[in-house]
Amino acid sequence: MIERSTADLGAPWPAPAKLNLMLRVVGRRANGYHELQTVFQFIDRCDRLWFDIRDDGRVRRLTSVSGVPEDEDLTVRAARALQEVTGCRLGVDIRCEKVLPMGGGLGGGSSDAATTLVALNQLWGTGLDEDALSEIALPLGADVPVFVRGRAAWAEGVGERLSPVELPQPWYLVLVPPCSVSTRDVFCHPELTRDSACIKLEDFLSGDDVNDCLPVVRREYPPVEAALAWLDHSGGGRLTGTGACVFAVFDGPERASDVCRQAPSHLRGFVAQGLNRSPLLDRLDQEIASPSLAADS
Ligand SMILES: C[C@@](CO)(OP(=O)(O)O)[C@H](O)COP(=O)(O)OP(=O)(O)OC[C@H]1O[C@@H](n2ccc(N)nc2=O)[C@H](O)[C@@H]1O
Ligand SMILES: Nc1ncnc2c1ncn2[C@@H]1O[C@H](COP(=O)(O)OP(=O)(O)O)[C@@H](O)[C@H]1O
Image 1 (cartoon, protein in one colour):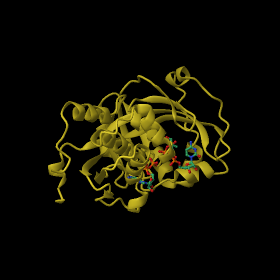
Image 2 (cartoon, protein in one colour; image 1 turned 120 degrees about the vertical axis):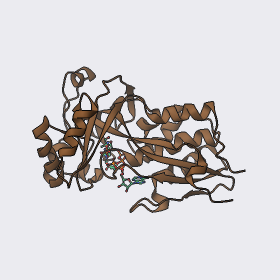
Image 3 (cartoon, helix red, strand yellow; image 1 turned 180 degrees about the vertical axis):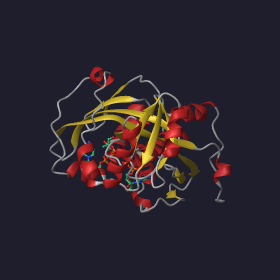
């Protein structure tokens, strides 16, 4: 098989980031996982993936992801999980251009995994429906199913009980503090609030947008505290997931970009629009309408 560049592989498959617009920790399961209530919305900031189908069954990652060995990469694990469930004998070379910061609470790794499942289900012709793909997705990470389904959602359980929601699609300024937060460490922290009262979607829509991870993350990660303190000057910021990223909401991109430009130099940031429909679904529709010639000849 001849090695190919991404230019030969057709349009990339997007793996968008998500924001948790609120996050309540309402209980803990016997296996240590926490019961949450959260609201997921996608943003138009994406990793980009290419899949080159192989006929020998091998799953390889051709691009490196800092600190993540090939066998542990969520894209590789997702592809192998799909092979296992369907018995598919095809393989794939995966290329991933990382744009999303890791450990940022933007769900980049989970989104890469979901994009791999959705793309390969189409390119391998394994024909699973959305429910079956979501079942494969959950053991890869609590956040993976929402990316598979591709709809902004109100989520309960560990994030797998999803109800689609139509939300405003504002512009967000997302700041990336210079640190990475371990989701596991936050959920293990003795001072994490674990008994928040459950609320209803209407409560969130009326402004109840607390993130229960915030007090612990603020205390343990000074760069997150600094980013939030800075955003206080322009109306205040929120934490996404367990962080490290924080975000502020704007009506349009101009004001968000103005504030972004004023951020201190140690704070990277970007402006992105909220999306209720993942760009992954559009790419899937495109593939169904006109299948790429990605399979090697
Ligand atoms: C908290 C959330 C909110 O969206 O986002 P992030 O900040 O990580 O993006 C997610 O639920 C994270 O999902 P994900 O990043 O897929 O987490 P996983 O790999 O499943 O779990 C990492 C570790 O976090 C803990 N964990 C995770 C989710 C959960 N509901 N309860 C937990 O206790 C577990 O200790 C687990 O070992
Ligand atoms: N393809 C991948 N991209 C990013 N992280 C990955 C990937 N595969 C495995 N990981 C692991 O998942 C962890 C969480 O990554 P990520 O989803 O980007 O952050 P978060 O869960 O905070 O949003 C990383 O620190 C890394 O160890």
